[in-house]
Amino acid sequence: MEITKESISEWLKQLQDSICLSLEAEDELGKFKEDTWTRPEGGGGRSRVIENGNVIEKGGVMFSAVSGKTPDFLVKEKEHSLPAQGSATESTFFATGVSIVIHPKSPMVPIIHMNIRYFEMSNGTKWLGGGIDLTPHYIVDEDASFFHQRLKEVCDKHHFSYYSQFKTWADDYFYITHRKETRGIGGIFFDRLNHNEHLNFEENFAFWQDVGKAFAPIYVSLMNKHKSDAFNDQQKQWQLLRRGRYVEFNLVYDKGTKFGLETNGRVESILMSLPATAGWLYNFQVAEGSEEQKTLLKLKKGQNWIHE
Picture (cartoon, one colour):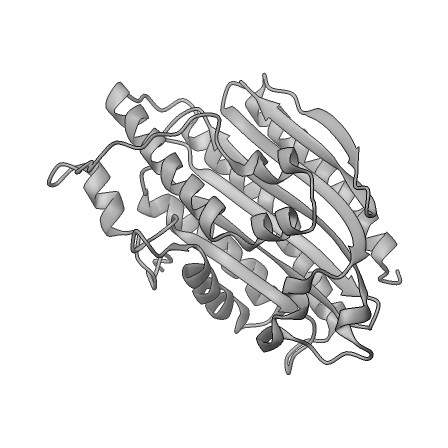
């Protein structure tokens, strides 16, 4: 199959379909509601949101394919520019992707995020980006090892260097600088992936597809494992505080949020990543030796989560 922007968009819509079906089957109550939209400057998308399920309190599986004049902030990112023909300032762009954030009801089930995206400009520049990261309210070492091992298997299938490279990138990207803590246990993150000394564009495209296909089996397994775990009011309060950290990252640092807002994207879809409720308590301190403290101590860059 020839890789074109049209074929990529069609594959992403099929991925959106399959992920929604998998999540609905595991939740057993919640159903996705679809909201289609168009962007005046070009393109549109299918926003699918699930709320008040058995496991999922709020989540979205969003597809978009938008186009128009290349935003100025992308043109100015010289340090990440790729070789291309023509002038970036005169180019138009096309971007398509699937973005997912799931906020569970239970503090024992982790928040998860995935995004895979494709971007091209009329001057010949194109690249792939994406990743998956996990944000447990309480870090369970066994779950962290499972999550990272699955991602490592996806990476190792394509190139031995990818897991280490993209894990480090995720640690650095999903970092709340003003809190000096990672958003969660990371995962993998990559951007501006076109071609390199290892793989050509077609080979990287196959890797990119495998990242997208890994989402559902990984998260369904974690949902199934923890959806019946008991929890108390104190743990629920901690969940609200951890959600607050999630909101801080997405509104202050997340490049996807910035791209959407600066390209006149659909605000409801862009801010779908935020939880229905979150909390901020003034000068909250965790108890010495508590499970909350144990989690905070692990929210550091460079953690080795895979234990052989």
